[in-house]
Amino acid sequence: MPKSQPYQPLFLRLSHALTTFLVLGAFITGFLVYDSYDRRFGGLELTEEKYSLIDIHGSFGFFLLFVYFVFVVYSLIAQRKKLIQGNTLQTLTKINKPVWWYTLLRISNTLALIAVGLSVISGKFQEEEWLTNGELNHLWYFVHLIAWVIILFSILLHVLMVAKVGGVPLIVSMFNIHYKPQDHPKLWLRNIQNWFNQFLDK
Image (cartoon, rainbow, N blue to C red; front, top):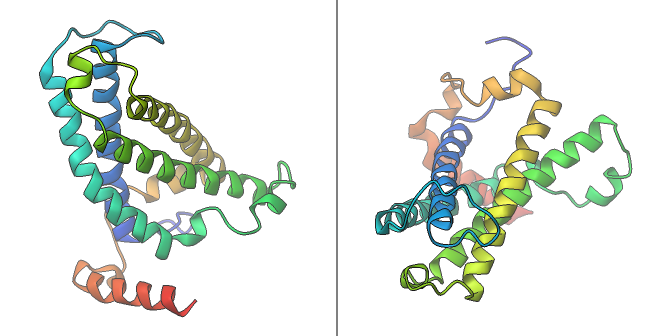
């Protein structure tokens, strides 16, 4: 492994990859559902009304709910330093310095977690028949649309900040298949216990 390439914990790589896959799947199918039934804010007219699209979108959301819960708990405990810190407002004043870019990366990470959570929660409060019946003005549907826009923004910001802060080495490190002995899956249960103990001791 090149010395310049940062090391990412195996659990982070796997959970991040699975979460990304489900988020992108939900995002794309969500747009196709919107493009089929709504289009009030514009659309591409790629699809016609198809009930299967709502089912596929719902399936992505269903699995994302469980994966997201694991990922967000892991992020809050084991990867807390990669999220917004207590000195965020202070570091934001140091414009164009390395700490400023790291702060923007942390903000994008946190924003993405919040947006995905908002989309999952609002999705669970919707009724499948709303769109098929032409009922497009429900509060939770609007919340879901807003979450969809925030996810798009946070993904773009996240990719830009990752490229700026770590460049190619950081991006490649998320796809590296190698892992350290202490990251072996058989040790994950012990590591989870250690994370919780560290969290409770704070």
